[in-house]
Length: 458
Ligand code: BES
Ligand code: MN
Ligand code: MN
Image (spheres, helix red, strand yellow):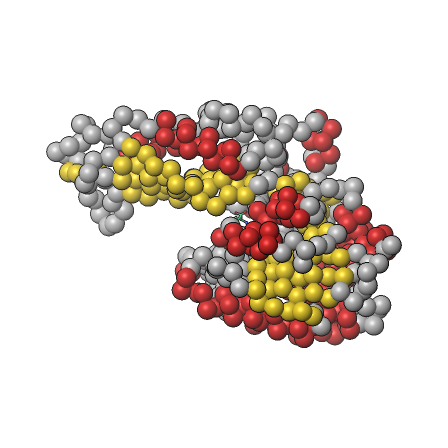
């Protein structure tokens, strides 16, 4: 089914991706700042070779945005804005990788490297799909395309948000296309039609003005670590509900019919449990595992620290305890509203004897994308052609905050044409991306453009 051009050039496509993955574009860590820029320059150069025009590295207060376009399809043709991110998550802990995160290898049909799936591998599908349309003699590029790739998705996309607000005319398009999500399985194609929002906080609990001998003082002071643990434990009840007053007030309850529709996507609890080594899954009473990870909001501790964690025993009551706490949000919660509710509640439940500080980090809004649009249908038809099966719509659990901003700031809907798998270990050690998935993406994307141009040409 794959085109001769793809078959002939696939080894080079993979080599180029591996070269890109060698550049450690970790946006969160200032020590990699130069590498992040090198990754942007590498992407810009490959886009130029493929025939993308008007290329620029757009400077921001942080890492640069790569922009380029190809508007030769003509004014009667629709315009697609392709978004993705070339930054990656930190690779720690390095010792848990079976091969080093920035020395990519192809093993058992998978590309192993930090960013292989999230999101460099998926961005590179778009670069190569464009090259293929330009060169394979199958009719050229049927849509106008604008490419915009950022280097700060993994740290909240704040500067891209400003860039979008400042460049509304330049970014005008009929639809946004991005590949930064996944499918259910390689033989169960799917398209995510929702993303959760995010409210993220660091909390600090302070007790005595110095670390204390736990024998001399123990029993007479509120221990900040004990207090923090009690406070965190109280954030869920025995049914897995979040106890913050007002937290669920705006949560959209799906109709029975809508839930039944989503439940059509195949899912096995036993396989889910086995895939992550769990004795049993867990979650909010009254909802299935796929619902708990998509249409329901959550609260999780991402990290907790304080006191003595070195070798042996030290008898001490620490002066301070800390935690990072995040909440995944669903329509129609907003991150500002939930941030305020969390902050008030967490300060209010502090037991006597400690003080609490809540510091909000980046947030993001949840989003649901339409399934009745020409662009969604073009994507579903494209996948049906290349997978031989109609994709099912799913609601995703992850967050890509800029997608809601594309809608609110530019008025443009997105199509989440992702090709990753949950088992690709994104953000974890041994992140990988299937060669099958990479090539399937390159094969599918041109079908999307053809279908979309056929439906939307005026
Ligand atoms: N690509 C992911 C989000 C994702 C993954 C959505 C898989 C759906 C399926 C993205 O790079 C990501 O990691 N987002 C962060 C949020 C960001 C603000 C740090 C997330 O979801 O934690
Ligand atoms: Mn991503
Ligand atoms: Mn990510």
